[in-house]
Length: 393
Ligand code: GLT
Ligand code: MN
Ligand code: MN
Image (cartoon, rainbow, N blue to C red; front, side, top):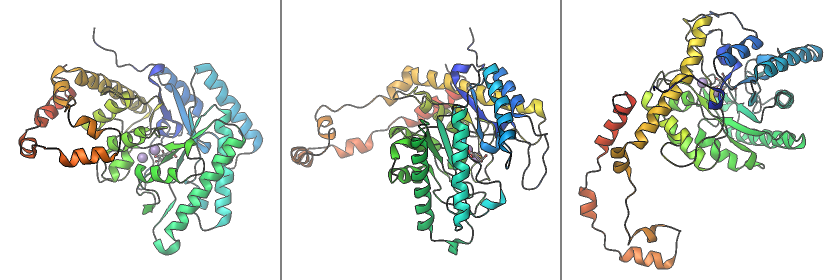
């Protein structure tokens, strides 16, 4: 029987309200789709097999809403979640749309703006906690500059640290059981954004007071914009148990942030990513939500939006099946089987000792033979391509 690629709850697929609700505005043109009621979006997502929905404070509660308005909106939304069984695993704050954030939020030179950013984030954390979110994402869309002389970049870095330390303290004090996931981006909307890649974030986290509760939320498009291998970034985060969340989408290299349907570009990169996340190559699997931070083409009406959403999930599952087949292929396994050397392996494992250093210095190694040996990677990569194209199973 052919495998079904229809999404089910257990796949843990999630979408942001801002993704399927994206009206298609861009810097050159107005909205092409009407703004949708969040409750409608949740019901539709439930219908097509998603596990949950993520949101910014203002995706649900408009900026400046009164307390009673907020209570009414959140009450109705919670009822929709209960009716549909949909979860809110992640929440975040919008620190980029309002003009007050034009020169940053946590890194602004104006203490009033920095204070407002903290206030808004604490309130967004309260909202996230009320909806059950255990992951809180930080995307510093306006934390950057064009006129670089406006602040010492070390000051920006320090302000980011102080803000994260403060907000970790808040989450702990409130007993929210939340973990933070930091999302990097090299540029756009600012000329340069501080902490531009996942690698920068990983180091930044190691300097935080509560580093154990802070990880990363890498996004395909953002690392590809920086010309990096997304799978390598994700692998490093996984290797240090810091992959707390992930933003899946598609992106052409060298472009603005496109946020395209997952797997619609660079299918090989997408294959290698799913292979890594699902652990078909061995090692630990990523257990968190598979979140799509993408939106439908501007050419689409609402029906096209749901085609887009189904496409993201379907392609993920197809790539998972392809990756499984690839990693179970006997020829592939043979090509990537670990090489053993009874004499050298013990010297290479377990760290330094003077004895090992002496033995390594004295070891006789046939360098020419090792240099001459062909590695079979042409065959290996062709097998990958054939699995990916579906002609080998
Ligand atoms: C915005 C951005 C995304 C972030 C979202 C979370 S908002 O759409 O482009 O990459 O993940 O703040
Ligand atoms: Mn994102
Ligand atoms: Mn993006």
